[in-house]
Image (cartoon, rainbow, N blue to C red; front, side, top):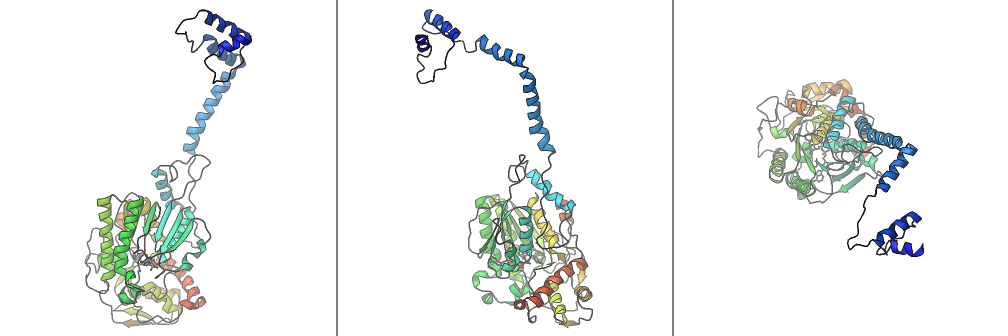
Length: 465
Ligand SMILES: NC(=O)c1ccc[n+]([C@@H]2O[C@H](COP(=O)([O-])OP(=O)(O)OC[C@H]3O[C@@H](n4cnc5c(N)ncnc54)[C@H](O)[C@@H]3O)[C@@H](O)[C@H]2O)c1
């Protein structure tokens, strides 16, 4: 018995011997007796096939195996496809009735589903949550940027705000402090920066006339923060980052690229009428150059880009006294000062509530179209009509004071948003009379509750777009 076992495992010293039965031993001994140089190998002996089969049939295991296969098929095919991905939670941190409706939220969901690829939004295996994106928002501590950050955070993304706090405020984003998905970096975008991100929303740029027009370059902190340099060098740096890490890049351009338009309303194909040497040109031409650079990086370096041309936007967290007409009128009415109207007050503007803009920016980023896209509310108001709405909302007795008009103030501004309607399925939903009270309550709190913000509007704060 012992010697038979030894013979059986000869040549396989490295393997653990399996105890052999008497039958096996006898068979092996017979085989060894009829020795041949090339031993006959029986890879699948009949007994080894038939024995499990006999066992399966006898114990009726086949039925269980078949049931198992059917269940596994159901689990991996039918259930995941019928399991609609969870809707993203867009509930804002700041209570605001004007956040996306169910139908508008759908668009983001569809886009994320279509992107494919685990982690970004394709079919996520059962039991696993969608992995958020890593997104940098330059200028994220500013008015528009901070509202965008709220939405991205609510969606579950990881957000890095890059801001030099020139016009932005920590207070605008401090409700995210302590959230591990949120980071704030004090940085001037005219200096390069390396970050690992999936998307870049590039908003960094002083957007109000007080900051880009009435302060000469030397008074704007330092030369490195001049508006033109921010638009050109800052945009170059962010495009370079997008190229290096393969991120999608969105530029927030402006309706100012149309200058004092000769075409009304403005469509994206209109090339504009900008004075290249006027007091506004550092902003207008800066944004035009930023658009050029963006398209060059797209065509020349294959960077995925998006361009939004934003029209006048208002809402909570706007800089008080920043010279933009809505914030000017609201602050003046709250302080019982006369509303300053420049020129005859018949120049027109359109006013978009900030949640509408943020919705448009996110749809643009997630969509398949480069743009440029006009994002604005086509409802057109003269400055006098706007003053009237402010009177109705805040103080019916507020006086209106006329002042001489400013240089290069556009006469008309109204977006044609057909392209955004068709390709982004986007249009504004908040009318001025609904959005203004929300801004007023925020301003009221800041004007009367926060003394660092209070004080008279300076003469520099002119009512411009
Ligand atoms: N709000 C509007 O009506 C409007 C209209 C057209 C275009 N836009 C564009 O939208 C973007 C956001 O505008 P906003 O209204 O929120 O303006 P904002 O001034 O409130 O925000 C701009 C942010 O960028 C930051 N910033 C400025 N220069 C910077 C630099 N060099 N480095 C880093 N950060 C810098 C500021 O500190 C601020 O937080 C801007 O690009 C603006 O041109 C806005």
